[in-house]
Amino acid sequence: MIRPSLPSDEAGLKALWQVAFGDSPEAIEAFFSALYTPGMAIVWEEDSRIASAMYLLDAGLTPLTDGTKLHTSYAYALGTLPAYRGQGLGSAVTRAVIARSVELGFDCNVVCPAEESLFPYYRGLGYDHTLSITEDQISRSEAPKFVSTNKVMSTGFSIYFQLRLALSPECATIYTEGYLRYVEQVCTASGGGFVQLEVDKQTCLAALDRVGDRLFIREFLPASHAESGVRLLLDHFACQSATLRTGIRTGTNALKQRPFVLLSYAGNQKLPSDAGYFPFVLD
Picture 1 (cartoon, rainbow, N blue to C red):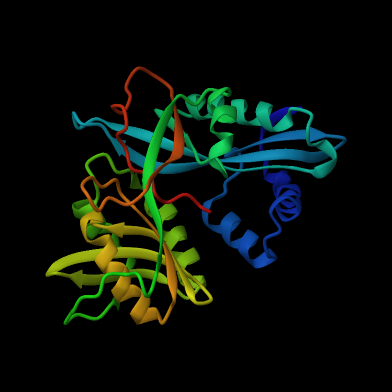
Picture 2: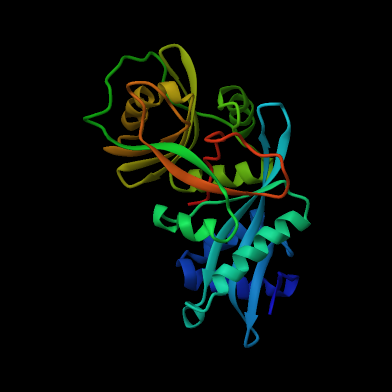
């Protein structure tokens, strides 16, 4: 049976999450405490247990070029118990998540496939618009060297939230406060966080995780200063390399673009081709 989740499903959902993704009990609890509410997941119940599930999160508003804002949901964490894989449960749950998004009044639904080879699979389920992102791997020795008189400073949520509105690309999703606070929580738990820095007299923002001697920069704004800003971040955190993710850039020094997320629309209002910026997936 496929249905929206109930309050009594939480223990089963957490058990499925641990089996499917291998996260710690603390990480699982943090997600459920911050973002999950009953009814905001689709579950497939089989043999009196939750065999497959996917979550539907309120991601906020995605602006169109005419100023219209699309209420955006995010389909997240599709997982199926090993004994039930290969039976089409995941496909059915994903289709039900899209339908549930429409039912709840969202204008579009976003999904981030785990790898690019899965894009055709999700297109076959109803996702028909691709958003790209720029991403690159940068080592400390390769990062451009420059002189900065400003140090990297941790910044509070409110400052990051407000500056992000000014520095983001035109069609960047404006995340809900709860969603963005959870991103900050995840970043901070790794030894990273939300930071503010100055590059060539330009105020910049970064949201990053730290994994050993490596940084995962989930967002760097504005994108035009990303490559220089990475050097300062690597020096500040004493890390040797970084995965850098930021908005679309053009020009001779453009970072590498790749397909990143897919959208399914509830109505006729859509982003223009190749427009949109949705960096904060929960990977």
